[in-house]
Image (cartoon, rainbow, N blue to C red; front, side, top):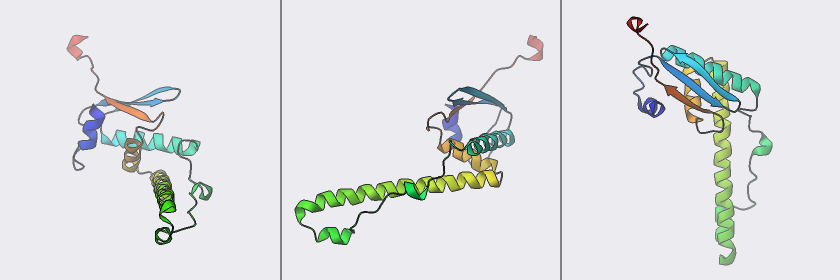
Length: 153
């Protein structure tokens, strides 16, 4: 699709080479935006990210209470446990490390969203929209469309 092509587009050239329709597929319907060029694309992206940020539930700030609790032992301590306990302790530690990476990723994402809105950075907003495309109700499509030539009317 066109959206995949945009991901591969060279960052030095324009993303929008001809006017398109940007369609957001949200929970309560679709929203359509006419996108004649990159400037419009970034303006719409900033509008959408700003609205979602202001609403609060689209991009909730991860709280300290959401941070996973560390196990009471380290890798070094696991090595001193009986073999029968090492496997379980290692799996628990690995699960904690995965959860911590996910939590830190959410914190970083929230900070990038907050910064894009505060600095009114449409390019950063577009990057956020692209990264979150698979999130529930955050999908979008960039569609080509046809118009009638004056001679056809």
